[in-house]
Image (tube, rainbow over all chains, first blue to last red; front, side, top):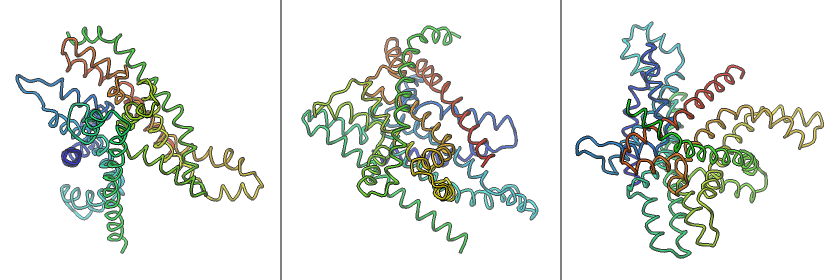
Length: 202
Length: 217
């Protein structure tokens, strides 16, 4: 469940952040301010508040979020905001000359963006995205507070059934599990990064 | 408009919760920074045992979710007869968290100090202590400031997790008010705004510092 939560929220975030990142680096000041306000607001509120708001606050007619949906939507929206900020940093990190050169070559704005800016920006942000993914993995533990049966929830349930000294074990095991789960992400990210570096400088 | 008047009614109760949140965040930062400095020195120490111990403390503090550490202190340790009040457990867990995160930032800051600085103070015959406290640390800490401010904001937001171990902080007071008349949407929106009212300006100040440092670098 933990992995499912993390991956679905990450998928929402990685796609949803694209329009926001474009908005954040827009030349139109109104668009820029509006997206900036949205991103800062989402990031300024702790995840647990978003989850409670979605789970307990939203009730449209008879519709209510079930815990898993609330967790996925909540973590997804938060990921959108954080990843948009990361993307923006990446787009800004692409040297200005690249855009100007693409212009001079007569490339359309679409081609410039997708073929020139995005590939280079991706190279810059891929480590930050991996860091965010491991952060998201840990943040998914917050879903246990709205009764999503992920790892922390399970360990608590186990600890309640075993009120003896072994009761401390589930917390230790679950802590180690999070660390272990984040290892492959870190490893893959390092490999991806070194491969892309080679592709550029080889 | 009715929302606004009701919010005004809730505010006093929320404010005491906000006070508790700020207190926990303050304590975990106050103790977390010095501990983080000590940890960053341990991680870079020559002694293997010291280094391993430092790394373990840092990696668990950063690698395990704050919520798990909270549960460990509040539900786990009492089984060994070490029981804390919920607020103490929250402070301890978040202090560990902030120490681990800030140690990484400080280590990066200290390592970013140019080698020549160290060699120069050696050549000048400064003692090891003077070299560290008078030369390396002031420069290293300066470049760590924006990152450390980021940790502080993260800790303030992290206090909301203490709700899960029944600390009477902002989130808990919101939940209590909400469960009286089931106005969850309203009350959690207010809670969110309270958090944002502190985090957002704090983030802007951090960004301002970052930009200023970048200009002088």
